[in-house]
Image (cartoon, rainbow, N blue to C red; front, side):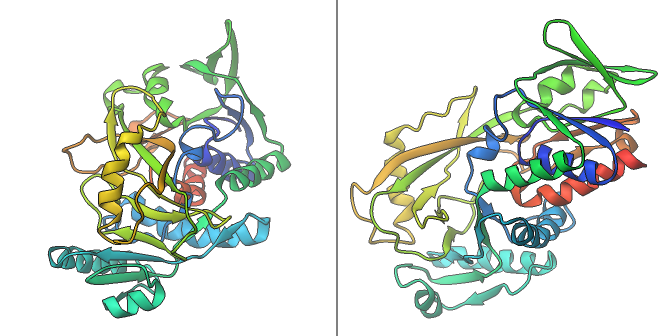
Length: 362
């Protein structure tokens, strides 16, 4: 079977790898000039443990399973990574109940080695942190996402897959022989199956897919996340997260593999793609960070970068789960649509890839 995967972000590459390993011929079409340049290149590069997500949701199931797979994959493929651990901290008494609820959720999600700890024990681990209660997640880590995507690409190419960069798919048409794929100046090919893993472009491609029920296309909401770098020497060895708020995990401390420390992301609801970081947002960052690191110096945060989450729920709406819309759901053979694959999409990519591959083999 010849399968077209649209989108060469981390999820598309994870799918392409799994489909190639299942014995299919794989073509990856990417509109940009390189792999993983949009959402996959603009995130925290965190390997999530799976603490927060609703029991039996796609987020919970894929994150926990794929996180275990990902550490093994990184070790076997030489992908730089580090199991740093993470503290989730309550900074006022009103947040303790929420922290306890997250702990219970982590246990329901089968997250290993998670513990609730006292403030004194948190300060033994991270002397600079302030909290009234904390949760320790030693299975959380960080990854070089670009090296990971290069490894995924190498895997599917080793199995005969090919990637077409600067190739924007304009239209998909269901025909008796499979799918007619329109791109470029009137160019077209025919494949047996298509996977839409186009991220921020998934809804546009779904609307241009003849034969796919249009009422199944969810809305797309741009939720921009800004990051600020820290100009001093890092003071934390672990990731530090506040208790989550509605719509996101809060402005947290994240580290890169070079040891640099940065803060983010916030949530900025926008109407169109825009990756500029407004320095004025730093005022809110100082206030947020000082709830758990009161000693944050003035004038130490520097605008860094931003990313856009491909959300399918809005500002005042409950967070939606991932959507993996397969033939068993929509009734159209040889077509899998993915929508709303935001965090923990990077962590979940290997498991998502395996699930999608089963839909193409059945």
